[in-house]
Length: 134
Image (cartoon, rainbow, N blue to C red; front, side, top):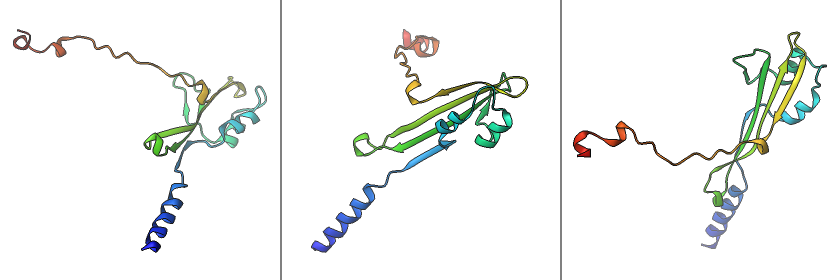
């Protein structure tokens, strides 16, 4: 009987140390962004180092966005809720000749946290019909 308890204990001990990590986008974005230089790097250099951009601006085709997001599954104390390890965005802007003129790096600390209002607007649908209001 003791052998079963020891076996179950060892199985649960070995399973609890494995953390599940979800990666999305480009890995090591911050390290790669430090290598590029304004007015020296061009579009071809960026494509060779980073690959195709995650998205291109709808209004300006010379503005590219690269995204890196890393989430980890929270433990028992977080009830399995995902935690962000990285949430980085690199914005690169080129001039008309294709030379890098601006780079902006946003990390998880610069992420805005918005508080949404709990107020509800009264309208015709929420009031109900004439008979319900009567």
